[in-house]
Image (tube, rainbow, N blue to C red; front, side):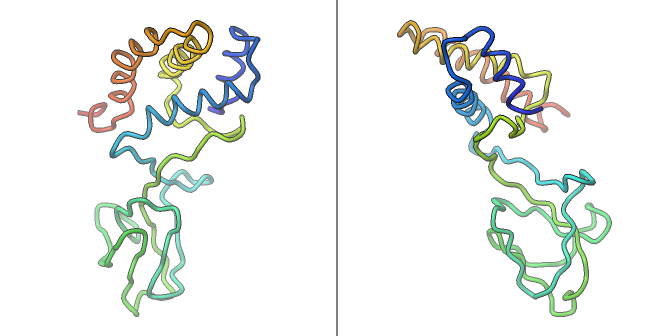
Length: 170
């Protein structure tokens, strides 16, 4: 879902604020929900939805935006290929050059800079994100942070639990 969806909803309730201001507030609350100490997003190929497919042209392969490389595999993610992984660099055996592999890696979520940027939370949690933005805007409107503090104590932990795959599938 694009950020423009939430910007449009909020602009109906808060017509005094520009769309850019609302996008900046959505970005703040969005990052607060996603940027837990261990919160990363899995990188997928936009066409297939699976892990990126890489043709190895050298023994050392670096993924610039990778925060955590999980595994390298040829067909089955449960059967990883033997490589050395250090930070965002993968070291292959010389015999692997010219072969193709899938790489499962994660990165920190990007900033919401334009309205066409995707929100990285499920649609069923969009109302919690919307409430957080409204609570932040209440500080600007009324000077009171009570609603924001309440949202951070009650709703933010709920949102983080819903985003945690280990919690969701256990």
